Length: 244
Image (tube, rainbow, N blue to C red; front, top):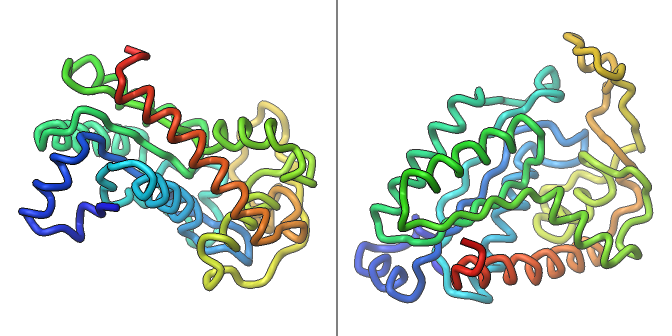
């Protein structure tokens, strides 16, 4: 495994010779209920990146721990970028990665908000159009989880589980157990359909969407392993150029 920031210049050059694939973990600094750390999304993406690099040669870039957060902005601890800022950051990073000799960029986003993912995808499309020598994959962990849970339905007990609920709590119990502060009551937001609201905490006071009490560390470990297996397939396809 090669963490970019840990390497010396000669070590970086050697790692780059082993693999021209760079993984960029992206998360958010966002509330995750009263029991999970604000960096949950970034920790999830970074854990996946590290495990991938242990299975297949790749360089793991330092994580981007800020994202675009809309529905959680009124909760304590949430810090959001604008879509313009996130697009600019990812474009600049992609250009620099390419300049450093990487031909494959894998963006893994542990934060799955719609506006956030739209910014990542737009930036990635710009890189694809601008840099003919680069291949790009953008992985939304929500889509990844859906694939994993569809194939392994026994891994989820809570129907409709989402933010800081059963799955994310299980993942953090497996990846960062020292940062999990117990559990939290189940909660289901009551946002009005179609209508944008200013006082978001009125409709979502606890910041949980699901039932964290159902989570176990063993469950989280099994989910992480399944996610890595699927991502290894994605990277193999990207490196072979089969999807371009």
